[in-house]
Length: 197
Length: 249
Image (cartoon, rainbow over all chains, first blue to last red; front, side, top):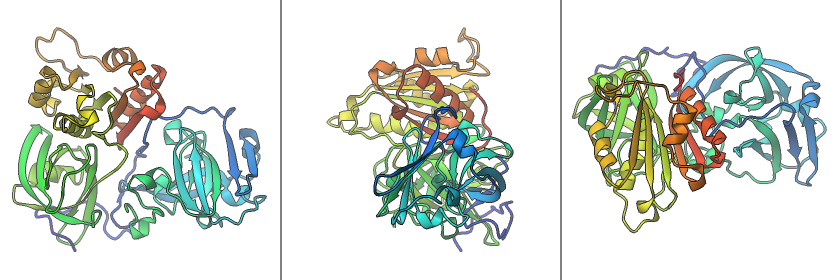
């Protein structure tokens, strides 16, 4: 236990099993972004997966919406220490998007409109662990929260859930993305408090 | 370990407003930091419960001391303790300073435009102070600096005397927009920051300034949109948003 802060008692929930270490609950939905919010219309939006051979799998907005849609409820954990439990999303599982993709790579880099990048191992995107989400709480995802669509990888710190996502690039070796090059952890497991280097 | 928890001692407290104060901390082993970085502060209750929040560093001091300015949030858990209870001589656990993006680099000769909403002025103050203290030989020392500070009322202004001094110096231009209550005798009614006022007040896009915007989410969203509409390149605009539900400018 650390230094006891004399006179501090706190009023957060104790021993909430859903809350990773060092996190506190929020009812709001704070925004963390590094720059201006890109304004992307569904008409210009597309999503791609690019393999090591240069093959590009591409979905337009219409094609993307025609894929199987999942409704998922997950807890999310931001590295700035807020967590939000039971958030509701609708989107396409990465399992669905990867069905036709052949690649030997174990790593990926997510690329976003506006230039943001973040690295995620392929294993963390598959087997029901990640989605490209376009609805939050039954509404179209707002631009400030990553709309038209964002990556949703809820078991990692939320900076991995790239807003305004436009594609995944398959990588043979792990490489740091944007925040990972600016002091944040390469993997970002909230249960192991992998916040900073 | 730079990013593990370490113990800092509170060596000074200075009120900024009725709801905010600056804590000066000494962190043995610290050798300065970058302007714009933040630290995490961890409080521990007697039963072992802990609460962690992030606060921007306000100072640009060499050595092992730094300032945090903390605004008390109405529904806050950590901020009321830091604003009202912590005293000189107390120890606090801190992690950092961290952050490599929302920082001003004295090696960058670009003109700099700072835009603050309320308590968002804190990391921008660190940049103003780092600029004022920069080695004259560093490329950034001669860079034009401009601050636009949107604030509710005169009694909500942080660092007022120091900003007045800076405004009179050749180091920086400072303009303040009062959104609810203007200073007595200013002859200018309070007004919300809007796109036109913003564009009049900031360095022109043609100068290609490095722009740092910090404030509540809604403030930052609006300002960043207006800057892009006024021709500022999105990749020259760095933002830091205070969480929660902020007010519009």
